[in-house]
Image 1 (cartoon, helix red, strand yellow):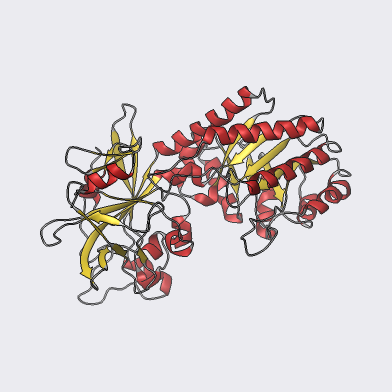
Image 2 (cartoon, rainbow, N blue to C red):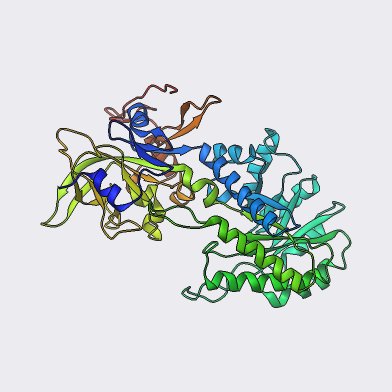
Length: 489
């Protein structure tokens, strides 16, 4: 039987820019030796590699800068980050340190905006694009931002929303956007998105509510495709339809000068991944410009609100294999010290695939396995990859050695969908979270952002008394949990 490294090298072009192995046959993730992280912090753990966020932000800016130069496009480009992808402080601070702007979805996002402003992480000039269906509290918080002089642009999602801003804003100018209800993909459960305002209502909304009010300015039309930016007939058809509507509104609304093309660029979900980012952005710019020229209107400024693309590839989850179970002649289970349902909920809920690679033992023979999580749910497993119906991991003697596996590009949505810090299925605790960064000299530095969730936090949420019973661990002490000295590398 060949070794695992032979399997990978004959299947992919390996090593890649992001993945490689060191002299000890252990995995490098962005040149970060993962075994060093494991030795210091243990498993299960989540990690975030912060430099990847900056890398993707700059990459997108280069893509649009190149395309605009190629076609002599006269509009400006603005990079926004949609906070729903990951609300963590370290993510928002990294994004804002790269002069980005923000897109929100909830009233509680505004509390984060306020705190970041208090800490001087953003200014009142930072664009705050407020999306989503807005309940009264969200509308109130948006209005307060506008009245306090923030560069806040509510994106209207229904015909009645504008009434609140008319009645409650007292700023001299209130800039608005309108989200257009796009058609969903042909295989979707319904035809038109539940979010946004239908095409036939937009002109009446502008004529009846916005144009007569001197303080209201329609500045932006918002276009969102749930499947993201893909080179297929569906995407191009919807973008073309949207741009013709933009041109129609622009001819009667001189204030309109921007579009937001929501729905992000894809991220890598397999080591085998091909997507021509530059060609795709070139075609977007070329199509927008062609339609505007055809309709004799100036090209719009372009906003993007990339979420998964910004933060997704910065994330990883690392587990230890704690048991090997041969359940029949063909099915071998590697049991991990975590749960897919609770810690990678997209893998369970929508069948999302991630890059799965072993961290160590690359020189060992490999075998086909199923990976099993700790919950009692039959769906808590992972056994296929994006490029293959089978899953292969190095074979090892569990009584003699350890085996660690990693899931990569997990940085978007998983904590929020999994209910970070709350109650998980079978009371599986949230794993520790480690931040990996580089100092000014390029050296790797790590810090523990959060320890593994404690039983006290769960008991408190569930309404149980926190007083420990005889023979149980004291507050702050978890049974069997190893303590790891935090040493910057």
